[in-house]
Length: 426
Image (cartoon, rainbow, N blue to C red; front, side, top):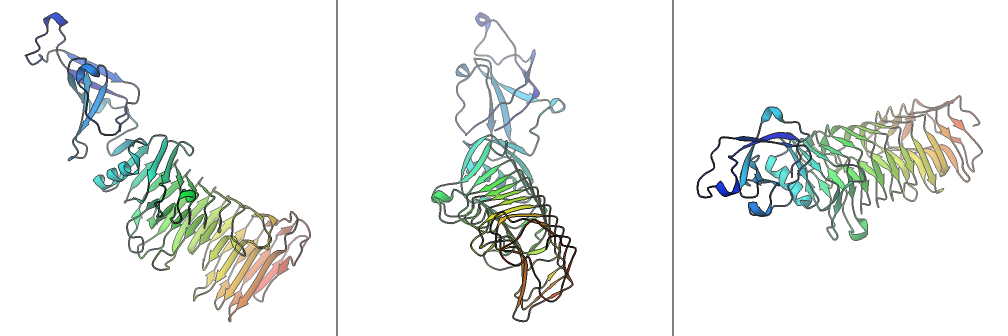
């Protein structure tokens, strides 16, 4: 499928009907120039009709054995005229290396473009629903929909697998991919397994997308022996997934971390597991909304063996007293170093605003500063820290936080290795 606004030239001789010689080749003495000012669409493959049945229409004939081997033809009512695009006249949003597809092409059509090009390709998707499974990305694929509520890619009924993936995540990554302006639907009502996205990415961008209704995770940013740094999520929604909204680290075979993940201005709601599980270094979770996430005795955000992470400017709401807003954990031979939890609003009913566990390892230089800790009704605790199996805390601080009301339990319950300074209404 294509879309264009271009000057296209075709050459043929115009004669009155009674003077046409239908046996001779037309004389190429008069140039006709056609201006295409609106998008034209080439849908699923089909036979081109006879010229006398398609007057005034443009058809694009593609050589399936040659990428870019396309020829545009115009029917004048009697014959097909080849149209030659003047390169300097192009004025189009579709450029070389770009493809425009419709729901009729389906996920299979998207996969064909990726496989034929080998990646480094822009694929623009018309509004509608594209159903299928295991769309496998490659380096440099930009998949761009027509809008968050306009273009949907959906796991087909009974697939019971991942909707979007990358080749062999435990061992390989894909670089510089972009997913933008698309809703991805895991269709958990008609599937018992599968993630909306499961893959190992490096330097990729996920912008204004929805990752919804997965039987498992909305987005599993897998760890890999290949680099998985510098991925950004902006303006996305992670909602109604059976498991985690956004999971970072580990894969289906082993447990490597990921690093340098930016999660800014996103929305996480009604996930059966945590909104975010961060495993690795340098996660930056900022300016996001978290609403009714976490499983029983779980947390909305888990900093699991994570270092140099920041959670800042977020609004987190819970409605159950057996859940925590944020947990920080050091365990399994991995220390937690230099994390910051700053300037967040913790609201609703919950077990604790921040819960820290040092299990046989150390949490060092954790800063919990400047947060507003509210109690809508039955919130139990503010910050709770504990050690197990010889774990410890060092140089941690709970500073300049504001409690807005009383709590059912302890507002501040700190282990050795912590200081508490300047907290209001504590």
